Image (cartoon, rainbow, N blue to C red):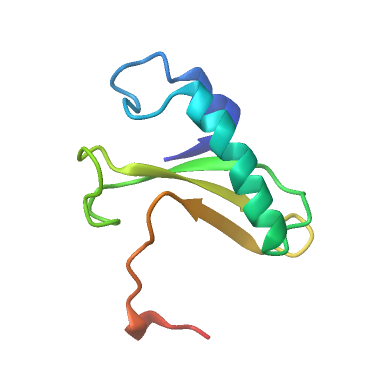
Length: 97
């Protein structure tokens, strides 16, 4: 699941959608994510989205519902930036550098 920030916030009234998130939290974290993205080289273009991270991806942090991450794909060169609450496990066998 990946949706725009606006779509995500609009669904927060549903208690089964993402019970660990609030609109205030998303707005606060969005500012922090944008700042981190800018520090990493993001030029401010592209559409900010929120992606659901299933609990089996990030080691079952929290309450078992999974987590969400902020994501943007830069329009001019396709570079993607991801900001999550917890680090993703990295498999060294998948290194593409």
